[in-house]
Amino acid sequence: MGDPEQGRFGEFGGMFVPETLVPACQQLDAAFREAWIDPAFRAELTDLLNNYAGRPSALTECSNLSEELGCRVLLKREDLNHTGSHKINNVLGQALLARRMGKTSLVAETGAGQHGVATATAAALFDMDCVVYMGAVDIERQKLNVFRMQLLGTEVRSAESGSRTLKDAVNEAMRHWVAVVETTHYCLGSVMGPHPYPWMVREFHRVIGDEARQQCAAVLDGGIPDVVAACVGGGSNAAGIFAGFADSDARLVGVEPAGGAAVGRAVPGIVHGSHSYLMQDEWGQVLEAESISAGLDYPGIGPEHAHLAATGRADYIPVTDAEVVDAFQLLSRTEGIIPALESAHVIAWLSKARHELKGQTVLVNLSGRGDKDVAQMMDILK
Ligand SMILES: *Cc1c(COP(=O)(O)O)cnc(C)c1O
Picture 1: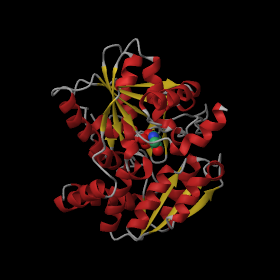
Picture 2: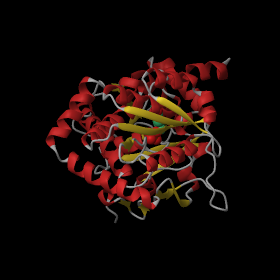
Picture 3: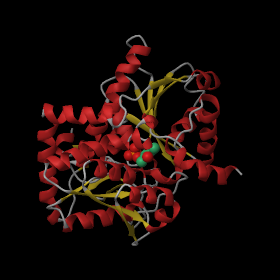
Picture 4: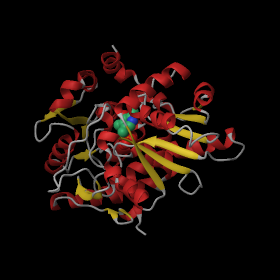
């Protein structure tokens, strides 16, 4: 029923790109396939993850929040990674692969700026040139991250087409890549796009799920949690933690913003190189996603999640911005952990579903920290 290594997740996935990019995707597929089974590549990546990014990330038992909600909450602490989220796992993997392929430059897209900052960080570390495309609207909203990227030596270019947000930045980054594909690797930020990206990016994030599985076994006497939950934008942090529990009985839950519920609306279509679910109008034009957290403002979802939803292996549940604002404060107040607004979506679902979850053990992927969001929250709460 579809082979992820061939770019197929059931009926979803594929490689729908302009002809000029087909050889580049095929070359990347071959390079990743070879690197991923090479012990030297794996050892170098593990060394970077441990000694540069700060892995393994902690598993935190939340006694206060558990008492308040009536279910046992365990947090996988991706917020503690260098640059503040899970994104560094994927970026270090891709930068290492780019260098192995002899590429000297990186290009990337970014929405809120988190993936752009992570890519700029890897480019600085590996002494590579880096261009990041960002929607003009997002550049205005996320000035601090623009300056961070510039500090790290990256050129930030404004995407001026369409709605001038993330989907337009992806279009511009792909257009750039076509022109300079000989020297440049496209460092895509989630489990989306053409093959091999959805598969490759999941594999680079699998470390989250593998660590969590072991850490849970230690805490739960060899057991597994009843539920594994993560927020879903493109779906990379969710894919990473789900990968560690795919073969278990754990219920998998992805939490979407109500204003960007690509799975909730379940309309199949092709966007940015793969066949998946996306928000579109009756003419098939891609709709704008809208959410309190810029990091979840993506109108589509990775093909693996479309497949998990279609087959019923995972549930995808929307929460509203107002519920997220409450959850942001709830975790801060009860556990002393200020979450990223994206990650607060999962806490919002826990809070809303507390009756259904009574007595269960829930593993939450805390995808990022909230430093980037405190100014926005200050405006909302004043
Ligand atoms: C980018 C981001 C997300 C959304 O991306 P996914 O690919 O869905 O994981 C979620 N949380 C944080 C903290 C992010 O920076």
